[in-house]
Length: 179
Image (tube, rainbow, N blue to C red; front, side):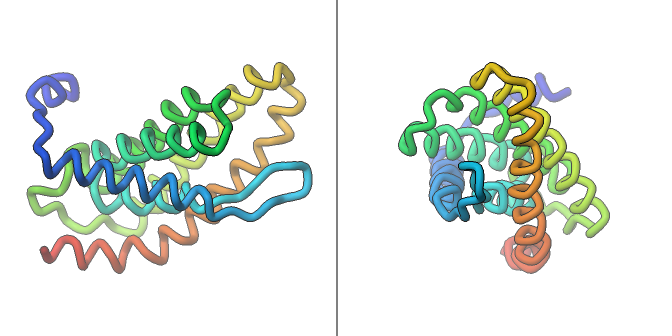
């Protein structure tokens, strides 16, 4: 079913602009970060991914997350993670958006997702992201021990994103669905 939707999908100028704006929002939000001892960081990029995926669905959320996260890595000097971020964050946005708002953007009125669906989607997105980055760290740093040690930082970033999305998304959902 998904493949048939993808082959029929044609991006309009409006779609490209929305995806570009969501990617820019993700990249900029990732620069808002708090350093944690040990060289890791907790950033607001995940909050942007979670919130925009709930609002705009899996396609917009996934592409915005993939492009924005990769753009941050490219500009921020984290090029060793660029491919990983593109895939991991893109799938995270797709998962959260699909579970809450559907795959395609909300051109058709989609009912506001229940809090239970939002919580479940965010938890699945957080688990996927932690697993994906565990594999990325293991590959890039060539140490399973360091990769295990870094999982806590991924979960902290997702927890911050979870809190922000739980506050913003329900309020913004009602606003965007009215338009």
